[in-house]
Image 1 (cartoon, rainbow, N blue to C red):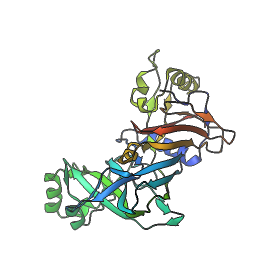
Image 2 (image 1 turned 30 degrees about the vertical axis):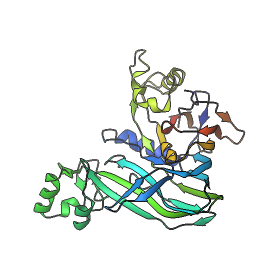
Image 3 (image 1 turned 45 degrees about the horizontal axis):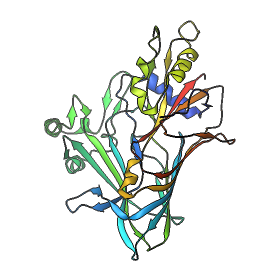
Image 4 (image 1 turned 180 degrees about the vertical axis):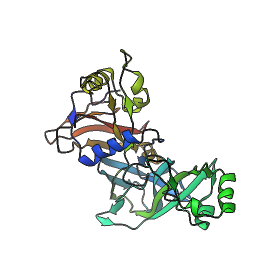
Length: 346
């Protein structure tokens, strides 16, 4: 594994800094990042729902994935390798998320500004939303009670601990029904939101089809206490292994963060990250013949600096425009991708 290491510094927009501050103030909340994924071939399930299935007749000739903290954009070139047109469901699944990251500006998993274009024309799509508890979908029950699934009933917990939500407005008997089903515990929604965008697509025989989609990603947030480490520089970073944060970068971050006396070597750091599902590309004919990953360098706004880390088997090139680019030929994804941004300074 290789990573973008301590020598790479980027600055981010004020919104990200503010999100980090909210993370620090609300660190006691559960924190989760939403994984965002490749288009995958899918079929309609007659009992309800969209399931990915293998479509080995259509290959992904090219994928260009651009990741920034404010926008994720993906461009594909698909090729129908047969002599006949193929029509299939194409799905973009958002892996399950729970009630977490409620201090971020958007609803977790909302993927604001999600759009898809085929041959330059924007398409309409359908959205499937489930509410899962122990493998059972309770979406029908929640909709019957007028509970918004994606926002967990517009759940809100103020700094003083007071909770407001659509669930609290229900009659006691209905609240008890939700509790018995495991949907609510001590006033906190307990379901997992499973969300899939999908549409039907025709792939012409022996022709390249250009597909593009983009959205504003939900950021993962973490609050790390680096004070009084006494040389144990690996411990606070153990949970960040999916971004291959190496010892050299860990040391730089610890030394850069001021402690209570204003000197380096302690204090807190609040990284943000963008997760992306790569392995759904394997539902098409593998491999991806030409894969390109672009990490955008946000424009400086104040004096803050960012370090970037991710896991990547191969070379990462730094371009003059501030982006970082990695290529892979005949690429078969084996794991998902996490791009981590660490703030140093303000």
